[in-house]
Length: 563
Image 1: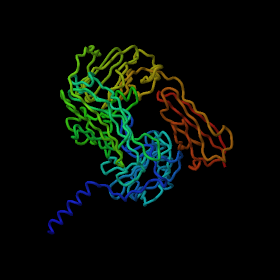
Image 2: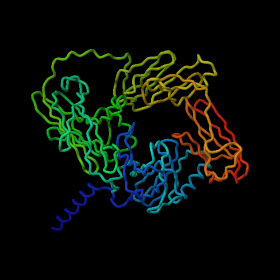
Image 3: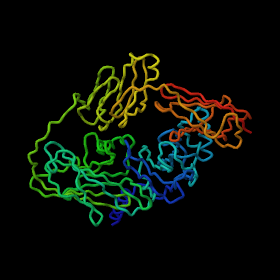
């Protein structure tokens, strides 16, 4: 009997561990307000899955940010873009909590990082303090919420990562968000796998007519199909206290009651996040800004969030059959919506298909590909693409047409221009640009020059051209004038701008001493905090040098007085 009891205990413990492998009472909410989300874990973003929770901060900055648990500051990174001001805390249980888009850090952390910035004479820094340099206690205020970096509005980005740096949904640790709403379904699509398959006599992607049911679920009109068919959906979730269209937590599919596919948005690694462009219909996203989640697996999609995939998620529809395909969409709280697709199996009617027009060049995904015409060459490393395809390649003077930006890429490739025909003066101001929109507006791509060759690396197809920038950046004071007393000001602000190649770097000094100026690219401002106490004289000379990406430079000087 005692062995049976022991066996029961072991099995029960193991089951409990597998069901709840994450500590539930270890991490606290990072804010002391009701948590309302503008973004959920692993929701679909451009070129990546979202790695945390975006917590609303009541449309303002400066809210106290608390350490989720005791530990030590293991990393501080400040950058103009991305996470902006970000803090990483390592905890005794091996997890790391991350806090991003901060406005500033707590006094002891602020003192530490500002000393590093002045030592390196750089606003952008990344530091890895030792465990004994910045210890953190439970419930300690470590920062204040903000809107720095690539943030689109005031909020706190909060993550929990494991000891392999993989982000995990913080809600798995007991971070609670009120949600009683079932996920919403916006669209459903069918994808014949090959030319031997069809849906309603069509051999390409077909949108299905969605029918909302009274019980909150969805269905489509019956489709007629044959062969291997995949499906895709456009869906979102919504929590109780916000109108944001956020990501769902789990998607499963069933064919005639048998599970054929699951996508579980619970944890992923940053190295695989790029495969989101294989998971969604990338062409539809680029052309219509709609993210269709493909409920089948194509070559190169190695996402660890995929589970129980049978026949790559495709179903096989046979002639003279009546079958049912179902999709279950769930949010983290278990609210769910179902999609039902009735399917009748029958051969396609005789269809006269127009011959497919193909460009002249073919790309082989498993080998190096090089294209060249006139003064332009393109080099694609091996495995730049998921699959082979015909690429539209053409050169007209200095304009390169390289297909359309509808093909997902795995690696960056190199575009090279021979500019030997240009004068030396022009060469120094040229850069490679990608052209966007109806008016083909040029956008700078990081360009290197070696002799008469200009080269740039990029990870998207499209139209490119040489552009020339001869205009210096502008520098305009915002809250002061030359020769004035500034004793009552807490900050010194200037506006900087460059209308073509963009700002590359800036440097500011007072009386010859380097000062820390925070660059907000969204507002085009540089800000100096007088509390840094670099200026100790009554009369002070401010000097700011701003340089754009082709080397055009502007120097601004002003004298101010301060007691």
